[in-house]
Length: 71
Ligand SMILES: [Zn+2]
Image (cartoon, rainbow, N blue to C red; front, side, top):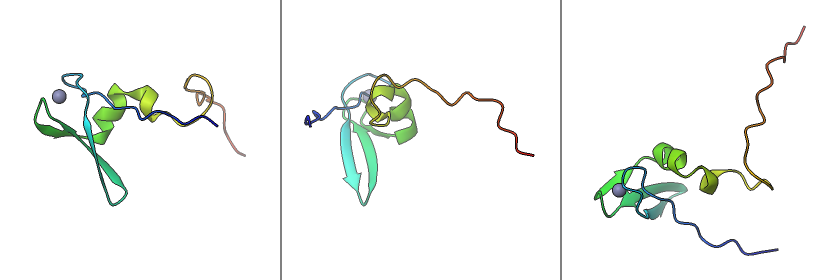
């Protein structure tokens, strides 16, 4: 197996590398440039490739099935 290099997420506001603060299972993101904490939801949106599941290939949304009725 290959060792994945640690990727650093970028700030959604200034695109600078964020500092990842891990505390008790939760991750917080702090931007030294904005000097404030960034919500994980926004960090995810700004860095989709970093937070996609470890599935192989590109992370394309495959959950667009509209017909899932049960009768
Ligand atoms: Zn920033």
